[in-house]
Amino acid sequence: MHSAHFRRKLIPIELAFLLAVSALFTVLVPMATSASGGQTAFTSFELGPFSQPGVNCPNGQGTCINSNAEPQIGADNGGNFYASSEFLPPTLTCSTDLSLANPTCGGTGAWKSTNGGLNYVTLPSPNSFSAPLNASASAWGGDTDLATAPQKNSNGLYNIYVISLERATGPLLNVEESTSADGGQTWSINPTGVQIPGDDRPWVAADSSSKVCISYFAEAALQNAVSCSFDSGLTFTQPALTLDSNHAWLAFEDGEGNIAIDSNSHVIYVIFPGVANEAEALADDASVNCTANGICPYSLHALWIAVSLDGGATFTDHLVYNDPNTSVSIGHQFPSVAVDNAGDVETAFSDNHNVYFSYSADFANTWSAPVQVSQSPSNTAIEPWLAAGSPDRVDIVWYGTSYYDGVTIPDNYPMSASWNVYFAQSLNAFSGNPSFAQTTASPVNHYGGLCESGVTCTGNRDLFDDFGVAASPKTGLASIVYSDDQYINSSNEPASPACTASQTNTFSCDHTDIATQTSGPGIFHKPKGFQIHGQGLTLASGSPKLTLSLDNVGNYTITSISVQLAGVSTSLTWNAALPLFPSATISGQTTSLTGLLLTAGGVYTLSVTATLSDGETVTQSISVIGTLV
Image (cartoon, rainbow, N blue to C red; front, side):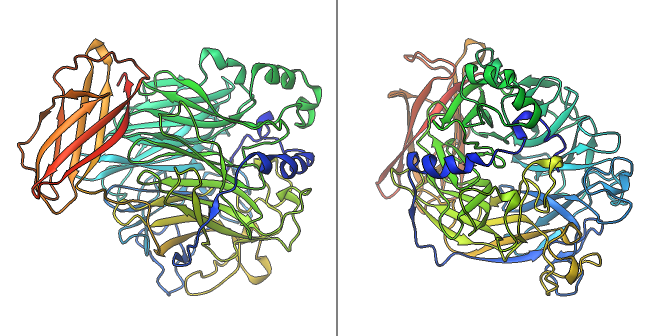
């Protein structure tokens, strides 16, 4: 749960903003075409207690109960799903916020699915004092996030990383990071995962087999920061601020979004809302009202992204979108960024009314105009998250309700407002007129108001501030983890002892649920002939090097491969001799690159042509970017 929403950038937005949204924002932003997605279906169920490793859910035995909320989810390249969520026991000895005086009120739950999200088994807690035996006492547990490594470790498995805020000695002290190298069975804990003190809302992303980076709001610096570890979280040796020298004025005039890493190019992205220019920042800083009650002259109406080409050592900031209505805030809650398997960058964000989508095909340098994703009956859509698969394919989820009157903010919605998890999928997201198939993915998970102001909330905060979706690289199908405060007491969703019929729709019934896609299309697909699964253009030390890996995903042997970079034929030294048989992988790199003037940040077209044993040739072209790592 977020501990510092008293900052200017997360103070509740004035009511007038919603009128402005309805009058202007939806006019300026096109609406996606609605697609028929009637075949997409989900199954939903509750996860097991985080303190009892080994419980398999659903099981129909009444043991799948938990008191967790505000979860996240990830999928590794083997098709396993991993979820984490904050432990929030509704007892008299534990406060509903940070429970600072009682570490037994902390902790993080973790779960794993090996069958495409149809069942989840409770794992040992990533951050208990004596993991895995004592899962009920922890100094950590707030603002959890999870990531999986894109490459295997020495055990032949993918590292799993779970982070949370320290809560036992005071809020905003540090970020705890836990690593599992054995599929979640055991965890190593780093209690000081970042180097800049005073931290809030951490996010985590992984690269290679052993690199992990944490983004967070550094209170001392009044801006977002990133700290990276190159030894699987054992030490974090590289802290950096995300605002470059040309955008220092954004300090304290920005919000948090998550971090994503392109596992091919190793480019790092941090998304965040902010004001649009220095004049707006100065006006907000000078405003007495902004300081007193958060009604600032300028809302966070611009979306920004910080980009690192050197592995997280430095960042450059790019504008994603600037809404001309300066009363609109697009940080509800939070903006989300993801990278597909070809290196395209996608983002989803909410204006407290609708969810929008935008993408970049040139490593965040330029962006498509935002497209409205959410459709009726989700007339209010907040807290978006997205998963990117193959190019042109994306899943987006959010909490939505049919209620919307253009005046009331979600915090004050009437009890007639029923909320669900909504899911929208596009298989042509990069077209000029993308279509999104929208599905209601969960039963009702809340009624009434939904506060987005963190610990400053005076209204209902049962769903907290975020949840997540991931898609299996094996099947392409999605699994969603979300918060629910309803008393259901069914075989798939039994009620915990603290959750009675009279306590439904309250904190006492808070728990974490799963909604897994059981039918419909997925967002990963295999292209014809071969699939490029790794590429990079490194310019470090004045010696440019192109690396390339591809899989034979077809039924025919590949007899020859030719490569062009920026239209120039390029020779690679391959790690294996051709022919390349079906299901086999080949990788190579250049010994030298001549005839090309390459620059860091330059975007170039990489074309790969393969000749198949049946005589057909297949060419695929993607973009690569010059990096320093």
